Length: 448
Image 1 (cartoon, helix red, strand yellow):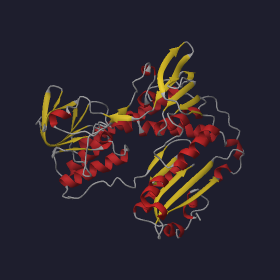
Image 2 (spheres, rainbow, N blue to C red):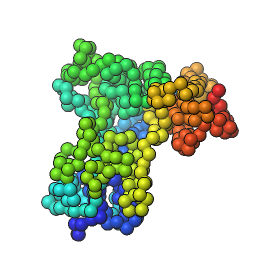
Image 3 (cartoon, rainbow, N blue to C red):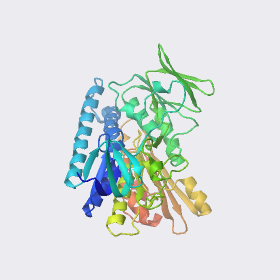
């Protein structure tokens, strides 16, 4: 095999593969290097198996409301092993689909771990490959804090390896991974606790979302432990026990999950040999064109520390190929107004500025619209989870710069509203749109 390529992509995740295939479409000779299963975090230990598990939990939540509609439903336990077996098989099929997509696109698939030899060459095993351009797309990995006994806990990777459901679980972290896992375990009856360092959940999102989510989770029976800074984990005869810096003891539990953030996969990559700079957090530093400080080396996806979302990595990868091989010299990803969803219970969707961000930038020009209600799905029962929505507008024309929703259906409705907000829609545009009734989404175009 010829060891010279137009572009060599290090990392076979969603972003790296998206770039490789788009570059190949333009006629570039491309190779992808990957040491693990294709698809990266998203396919193997992220979005895909997470969403499958979320669907499972959602069924459990819906069973609770079956009697409201006249059904007599008896749920005879849950077979976690069957879920894992079917989920793993689905992921394996996707791995093969990704490999097939590389083959059909004419992209060479190099199995192994890449390490820079110099700015144009990487070693994969005992062979070297050179390229005119290189793209770093190695993704990230879960952080395990440096505290005594940390090895007794597992990360999000370990969550998907569990062969049985723990009866008692402690999830340490306040972000989207922590709250998603908490909802999944709780739906099946696991005694679930979440320990957070400060006093809130999903703090990088609009404060309304964190506030409403905490209320919903506690109402469902999830215990939120605030001000819990881990100092150690001890394995006892009764289970795992967390000690905090303030001297508190949380536990015992059967499983501890670290959900305290992610770090870039750069160890062993030899970036120093290529002269590639990293930022203060250890992520590969890039400009708006995904360009590193080395002219012919780019980076994209989670390894850059910018919006660690699969569609973001894919979009950045394709735009990079458009610019380098498609003649679109100014083509790049705009990292503003990127929608995302947290698959908690209830789910949350968000796009654009938070209220705090909008007020910091626009001050008194900000006007807020909110609503809170019980979705019609719960009309026939006594248990009525709440949906909450917020629109953030700026200026005399009330341009909508932020939209935040928590409640059933948020994960689906946000995509369309993200298009409108990206196009510069105003509150009057929302008001002039005829509502779809009866839905929860109609509330976003009828707020006063």
